[in-house]
Image (cartoon, rainbow, N blue to C red; front, side):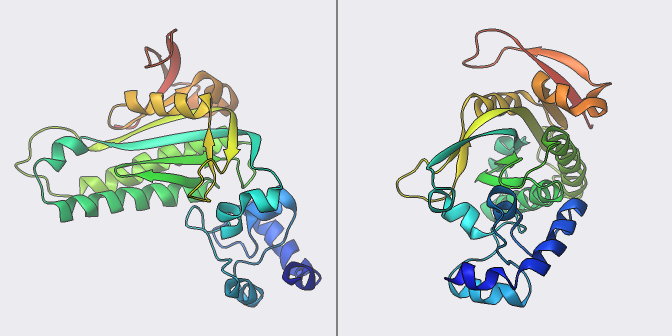
Length: 268
Protein backbone atom coordinates (compact mmCIF):
# COMPACT_ATOMS: atom_id res chain seq x y z
CA UNK A 1 0.00 0.00 0.00
CA UNK A 2 2.85 2.38 0.82
CA UNK A 3 4.47 1.92 -2.61
CA UNK A 4 1.12 2.40 -4.39
CA UNK A 5 0.00 5.46 -2.47
CA UNK A 6 3.26 7.31 -3.06
CA UNK A 7 3.85 6.32 -6.66
CA UNK A 8 1.96 9.26 -8.18
CA UNK A 9 3.68 11.77 -5.91
CA UNK A 10 7.08 10.35 -6.81
CA UNK A 11 6.88 10.82 -10.56
CA UNK A 12 8.57 14.24 -10.51
CA UNK A 13 11.37 13.21 -8.12
CA UNK A 14 11.81 10.08 -10.23
CA UNK A 15 12.41 12.19 -13.33
CA UNK A 16 14.93 14.34 -11.48
CA UNK A 17 16.72 11.28 -10.14
CA UNK A 18 16.94 9.81 -13.62
CA UNK A 19 18.89 12.89 -14.65
CA UNK A 20 21.11 12.48 -11.61
CA UNK A 21 21.85 8.92 -12.71
CA UNK A 22 23.31 10.19 -15.95
CA UNK A 23 25.64 12.49 -14.01
CA UNK A 24 26.73 9.67 -11.67
CA UNK A 25 26.34 11.91 -8.65
CA UNK A 26 26.38 10.66 -5.09
CA UNK A 27 23.07 12.15 -3.99
CA UNK A 28 20.34 10.38 -5.99
CA UNK A 29 16.86 11.06 -4.63
CA UNK A 30 15.53 7.59 -5.44
CA UNK A 31 17.21 4.19 -5.15
CA UNK A 32 19.10 3.73 -8.38
CA UNK A 33 19.17 -0.05 -7.94
CA UNK A 34 15.38 -0.38 -7.55
CA UNK A 35 14.85 1.98 -10.47
CA UNK A 36 17.35 0.28 -12.80
CA UNK A 37 16.25 -3.24 -11.94
CA UNK A 38 12.50 -2.86 -11.47
CA UNK A 39 11.54 0.75 -12.34
CA UNK A 40 10.33 1.18 -8.76
CA UNK A 41 10.87 4.78 -7.51
CA UNK A 42 11.89 4.21 -3.88
CA UNK A 43 12.83 7.55 -2.23
CA UNK A 44 16.09 7.52 -0.28
CA UNK A 45 16.56 11.27 0.23
CA UNK A 46 14.23 14.19 0.84
CA UNK A 47 10.80 14.37 2.53
CA UNK A 48 9.33 11.45 0.57
CA UNK A 49 11.94 9.13 2.08
CA UNK A 50 10.65 9.67 5.64
CA UNK A 51 7.69 7.23 5.48
CA UNK A 52 9.96 4.55 4.04
CA UNK A 53 12.43 4.96 6.89
CA UNK A 54 9.60 4.13 9.29
CA UNK A 55 9.42 0.74 7.54
CA UNK A 56 13.20 0.23 7.80
CA UNK A 57 13.96 1.19 4.18
CA UNK A 58 17.10 3.33 4.30
CA UNK A 59 20.24 3.94 2.24
CA UNK A 60 22.47 0.91 1.87
CA UNK A 61 25.99 0.70 3.22
CA UNK A 62 26.97 -1.05 -0.02
CA UNK A 63 26.37 2.19 -1.92
CA UNK A 64 24.52 5.28 -0.62
CA UNK A 65 22.59 5.56 -3.89
CA UNK A 66 20.79 2.24 -3.37
CA UNK A 67 18.47 1.18 -0.55
CA UNK A 68 18.10 -1.68 1.87
CA UNK A 69 15.45 -3.28 -0.35
CA UNK A 70 18.32 -4.04 -2.72
CA UNK A 71 20.44 -5.69 -0.04
CA UNK A 72 17.84 -7.32 2.22
CA UNK A 73 14.75 -8.15 0.20
CA UNK A 74 16.18 -9.53 -3.01
CA UNK A 75 14.01 -12.63 -3.33
CA UNK A 76 10.79 -10.78 -2.47
CA UNK A 77 11.28 -7.89 -4.88
CA UNK A 78 12.83 -9.76 -7.82
CA UNK A 79 10.47 -12.73 -7.30
CA UNK A 80 13.48 -15.01 -7.77
CA UNK A 81 16.11 -16.30 -5.42
CA UNK A 82 18.91 -15.90 -8.00
CA UNK A 83 19.40 -14.09 -11.31
CA UNK A 84 22.13 -14.25 -13.96
CA UNK A 85 23.81 -10.98 -14.80
CA UNK A 86 26.76 -9.64 -16.73
CA UNK A 87 29.05 -7.82 -14.31
CA UNK A 88 32.59 -6.78 -13.53
CA UNK A 89 34.02 -7.97 -10.22
CA UNK A 90 36.81 -6.14 -8.40
CA UNK A 91 38.86 -7.46 -5.47
CA UNK A 92 41.30 -5.27 -3.55
CA UNK A 93 43.62 -6.15 -0.68
CA UNK A 94 46.35 -4.46 1.35
CA UNK A 95 49.81 -5.83 0.51
CA UNK A 96 52.29 -6.03 3.40
CA UNK A 97 49.50 -6.09 5.96
CA UNK A 98 50.43 -9.46 7.49
CA UNK A 99 54.02 -8.33 7.99
CA UNK A 100 52.79 -5.10 9.55
CA UNK A 101 50.22 -6.82 11.78
CA UNK A 102 53.01 -8.69 13.57
CA UNK A 103 54.70 -5.44 14.55
CA UNK A 104 52.10 -2.86 15.58
CA UNK A 105 49.21 -2.76 18.04
CA UNK A 106 45.71 -3.84 17.06
CA UNK A 107 44.19 -0.38 17.48
CA UNK A 108 46.50 1.05 14.87
CA UNK A 109 45.84 -1.90 12.58
CA UNK A 110 42.10 -1.25 12.75
CA UNK A 111 42.71 2.39 11.84
CA UNK A 112 44.67 1.30 8.73
CA UNK A 113 41.89 -1.10 7.69
CA UNK A 114 39.25 1.59 8.20
CA UNK A 115 41.29 4.04 6.13
CA UNK A 116 41.70 1.47 3.35
CA UNK A 117 38.02 0.51 3.28
CA UNK A 118 36.90 4.13 3.31
CA UNK A 119 39.17 5.13 0.41
CA UNK A 120 38.11 2.06 -1.58
CA UNK A 121 34.40 2.64 -0.94
CA UNK A 122 34.55 6.26 -2.06
CA UNK A 123 36.27 5.24 -5.30
CA UNK A 124 33.84 2.39 -5.98
CA UNK A 125 30.74 4.50 -5.26
CA UNK A 126 32.02 7.29 -7.51
CA UNK A 127 31.84 4.83 -10.42
CA UNK A 128 28.48 3.26 -9.50
CA UNK A 129 29.82 0.04 -8.02
CA UNK A 130 28.79 -1.51 -4.72
CA UNK A 131 31.04 -2.70 -1.90
CA UNK A 132 29.53 -6.16 -1.64
CA UNK A 133 31.87 -7.73 0.92
CA UNK A 134 34.58 -6.57 3.29
CA UNK A 135 37.06 -9.17 4.50
CA UNK A 136 39.45 -7.58 6.98
CA UNK A 137 42.15 -5.98 4.85
CA UNK A 138 40.33 -6.84 1.61
CA UNK A 139 37.04 -6.24 -0.16
CA UNK A 140 34.92 -7.27 -3.14
CA UNK A 141 32.96 -4.89 -5.38
CA UNK A 142 30.35 -5.47 -8.08
CA UNK A 143 29.80 -3.21 -11.09
CA UNK A 144 26.59 -3.31 -13.17
CA UNK A 145 24.31 -4.64 -10.42
CA UNK A 146 22.05 -3.34 -9.04
CA UNK A 147 23.02 0.01 -10.62
CA UNK A 148 23.27 -0.58 -14.36
CA UNK A 149 26.41 0.64 -16.16
CA UNK A 150 26.85 -0.50 -19.74
CA UNK A 151 30.51 0.52 -19.45
CA UNK A 152 30.98 -1.49 -16.24
CA UNK A 153 34.43 -2.78 -17.22
CA UNK A 154 35.60 0.79 -17.78
CA UNK A 155 33.96 1.90 -14.51
CA UNK A 156 35.72 -0.83 -12.50
CA UNK A 157 39.14 0.04 -13.93
CA UNK A 158 38.63 3.74 -13.21
CA UNK A 159 37.58 2.85 -9.67
CA UNK A 160 40.72 0.73 -9.28
CA UNK A 161 42.91 3.61 -10.46
CA UNK A 162 41.23 5.87 -7.91
CA UNK A 163 41.70 3.23 -5.20
CA UNK A 164 45.41 3.06 -5.93
CA UNK A 165 45.78 6.84 -5.97
CA UNK A 166 43.79 7.55 -2.82
CA UNK A 167 45.19 4.63 -0.83
CA UNK A 168 48.76 5.46 -1.86
CA UNK A 169 48.26 9.05 -0.70
CA UNK A 170 46.71 7.97 2.61
CA UNK A 171 49.09 5.10 3.39
CA UNK A 172 52.07 7.23 2.37
CA UNK A 173 51.30 9.68 5.17
CA UNK A 174 51.47 6.98 7.85
CA UNK A 175 54.63 6.61 9.92
CA UNK A 176 56.06 3.10 9.74
CA UNK A 177 59.58 3.97 10.85
CA UNK A 178 61.48 1.00 12.21
CA UNK A 179 59.03 -1.59 10.87
CA UNK A 180 61.15 -2.90 8.00
CA UNK A 181 61.13 -2.44 4.25
CA UNK A 182 58.11 -4.57 3.31
CA UNK A 183 55.91 -2.45 0.98
CA UNK A 184 52.47 -1.42 2.19
CA UNK A 185 50.18 -0.88 -0.76
CA UNK A 186 47.12 -2.25 -2.50
CA UNK A 187 46.75 -5.05 -5.03
CA UNK A 188 43.66 -5.16 -7.27
CA UNK A 189 42.20 -7.85 -9.53
CA UNK A 190 39.37 -7.28 -12.04
CA UNK A 191 37.41 -9.69 -14.25
CA UNK A 192 34.19 -9.38 -16.27
CA UNK A 193 31.67 -12.06 -17.18
CA UNK A 194 28.46 -13.78 -16.21
CA UNK A 195 27.71 -14.17 -12.51
CA UNK A 196 24.90 -15.62 -10.43
CA UNK A 197 23.50 -13.01 -8.07
CA UNK A 198 21.18 -13.69 -5.18
CA UNK A 199 20.88 -14.70 -1.54
CA UNK A 200 22.83 -17.89 -0.95
CA UNK A 201 22.72 -18.07 2.84
CA UNK A 202 19.93 -19.25 5.11
CA UNK A 203 20.97 -16.92 7.95
CA UNK A 204 21.83 -13.74 6.01
CA UNK A 205 19.60 -11.90 3.54
CA UNK A 206 22.27 -9.81 1.77
CA UNK A 207 22.82 -10.63 -1.88
CA UNK A 208 26.19 -11.45 -3.39
CA UNK A 209 27.66 -12.79 -6.63
CA UNK A 210 29.14 -16.24 -7.18
CA UNK A 211 30.63 -18.17 -10.08
CA UNK A 212 33.78 -18.51 -12.14
CA UNK A 213 33.94 -14.78 -12.84
CA UNK A 214 34.16 -14.01 -9.13
CA UNK A 215 36.76 -16.73 -8.57
CA UNK A 216 39.01 -15.49 -11.38
CA UNK A 217 38.85 -11.88 -10.15
CA UNK A 218 39.90 -13.11 -6.71
CA UNK A 219 42.78 -15.16 -8.17
CA UNK A 220 44.01 -12.14 -10.14
CA UNK A 221 43.98 -9.98 -7.03
CA UNK A 222 46.05 -12.59 -5.16
CA UNK A 223 48.81 -12.18 -7.78
CA UNK A 224 48.84 -8.37 -7.85
CA UNK A 225 51.77 -6.65 -6.19
CA UNK A 226 51.46 -3.43 -4.21
CA UNK A 227 50.40 -0.69 -6.62
CA UNK A 228 49.33 -3.12 -9.36
CA UNK A 229 45.94 -3.66 -11.03
CA UNK A 230 45.64 -7.02 -12.83
CA UNK A 231 42.89 -6.98 -15.47
CA UNK A 232 41.61 -10.06 -17.29
CA UNK A 233 41.60 -10.19 -21.08
CA UNK A 234 37.79 -10.16 -21.02
CA UNK A 235 37.68 -6.92 -19.05
CA UNK A 236 40.47 -5.37 -21.11
CA UNK A 237 38.58 -6.10 -24.35
CA UNK A 238 35.61 -4.10 -23.05
CA UNK A 239 37.63 -1.22 -21.61
CA UNK A 240 39.42 0.02 -24.72
CA UNK A 241 41.87 2.89 -24.31
CA UNK A 242 42.27 2.53 -20.55
CA UNK A 243 44.45 -0.54 -20.99
CA UNK A 244 45.78 0.04 -24.52
CA UNK A 245 49.33 0.60 -23.28
CA UNK A 246 49.25 -1.86 -20.38
CA UNK A 247 51.81 -4.65 -20.17
CA UNK A 248 50.72 -8.28 -20.60
CA UNK A 249 51.52 -10.97 -18.05
CA UNK A 250 50.84 -14.72 -18.16
CA UNK A 251 49.80 -16.07 -14.78
CA UNK A 252 49.49 -19.54 -13.32
CA UNK A 253 46.47 -19.31 -11.06
CA UNK A 254 45.32 -21.74 -8.40
CA UNK A 255 42.52 -24.01 -9.62
CA UNK A 256 42.93 -22.98 -13.29
CA UNK A 257 44.73 -25.44 -15.58
CA UNK A 258 45.90 -23.12 -18.35
CA UNK A 259 47.92 -19.90 -17.94
CA UNK A 260 45.74 -16.80 -17.77
CA UNK A 261 46.64 -13.65 -19.68
CA UNK A 262 46.26 -10.44 -17.71
CA UNK A 263 46.92 -6.80 -18.45
CA UNK A 264 48.95 -4.98 -15.82
CA UNK A 265 48.42 -1.39 -14.78
CA UNK A 266 51.19 -0.38 -12.38
CA UNK A 267 50.68 2.82 -10.43
CA UNK A 268 53.90 2.83 -8.42
